Length: 175
Image (cartoon, rainbow, N blue to C red; front, side):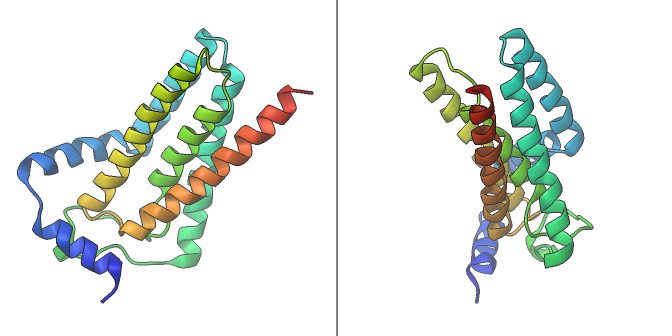
């Protein structure tokens, strides 16, 4: 039996009503509409603190990760977890997770691209962003929307775009 299936079976047998409620709220917050509004808010905050270029890079990295993940789903065409292990019904392929790619890409670029006022502020941002990315990934698996490896693949894809976009931005701004 594969690891994804064993993990999903374990999760399905250890769900609680409180954790399920939290996961549903997170799933609602990670819808593409809410994430889009969040990106707009992040951009506006970036303008307010004079980091609009870095914020654009973060939005572009997350968006690109999500678009590429969507394209890869068509190629991979992996089915979602079975209905007996899932609390959600989705109609698309599973691998990689677009939401995981979007959140990881945005978070990585957001940590690397801006000029942070101090290392302590950067560390605090890293903790908060890492917590958010992990929590959203947990909700995707907990509710059965994705296999654990779908989320890991989405995180890797998104983080790669975040690193690439932030590195390109850093080189461009130092010229």
